[in-house]
Amino acid sequence: MRQWIYYMGVLMVFFSGCRELYEPELSSFDHNLLVVEGYIDVGESTTEFKISRTNPIYSEQASTPQNGALVAVEGQREGVWDLIPQGDGLYALEGSLPTNQAYRLTISMDNTQYASQFVAPIITPEINEVSFEKSPGGMKIFASTKGNEEANFFIWGYEETWIYRTPYVSYFEYDQELEDFVNQDQRLHQCWDEENSLRIIMESAERFQNRQINNKELLEIPLNSEKLGHRYSILVRQRAVDHDAFVFWESIRRNSDDIGNIFSPLPSFLSGNIINLDHPSEPVIGYVSVGISTEKRIFIDRQDAQPWLAIIPEYRACQIDTVSREDYADHFRFSNNVPIQEYCDGFSPVCTAFLSTTRNCTDCRLRGGTLERPSFWEDFSF
Image (cartoon, one colour):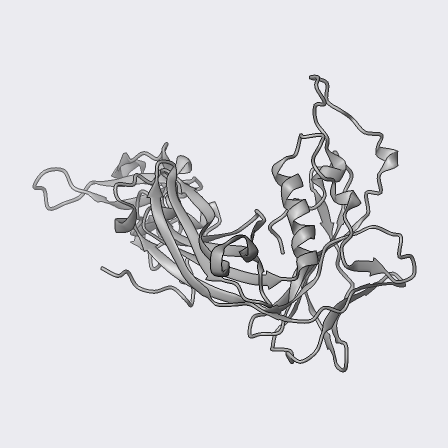
């Protein structure tokens, strides 16, 4: 579960009635705490865990991925399932697990054994609806569900995917050997990008009549965001957890939301359900839950957001130049300039110039997106 700032409260405490930054004695902290993030899914979804170590308070990176560990899911009655290393501290197990027993996570590395408590699976109720509504601040997205006697405490996460486009499309490229233009075989102007939830989003169904949770706000897409410029999709994942897990994550959530408040609960005082089997007093950050998660995906078309002016700051400086034939070689050879299309002056049948811009204004991949259409992507509904 990657939606939380797992140890900032341990490492940062700001302002206690004055303007001087509180700088703790670094020697009083253990900067190598094990962090375990994930969920044992006994349904059709992938069981995935991120394992890392905390870094010192002033490090540029909050954590260091823990590679080289042996990670497994162990059944209380029978069975051990090994998780396969994916790199960057990520370990995954594909395929379903039996639902008729409790499970725990085990981690072995550097002659040290860690394990969570055995936890019985909780079957998560279906998501009744994922909805959206325009707001003064942008576009809000909600989830609705209903708890039951076994599933009262919920945590949500989501994966966003959207289309964005460059302001210009290049139909040609300059061939330096031929010293001429050739057709651009692949269009590079449209990309898909994605982002995962970082916040802890949770709710207790016990607070509501008939355990019905209506329109729990998951996020608000800010005005002018590129996410709603063309087409947007969100996959909402819902997980039911037990009361102890809910208390743990609620404390983490409060601390994450209240960084800077000296009265915030500190994660260092929280007790998760993972221990070092040889040294139980060693702090370990994380809580392993078990169950079947549920998912629901929706799409939002640009018509649903109208009026909406999507702004991509990186493209605001994009401009078009007109390049004469005698300047082609100097302009396009060994440069960041790319041809867009021919430019013909008036009614002349001969085009003697080319329109040009910089590569970042025609190649969407330079902003980190991908040209590959996601397998789940549906066509526009209009």
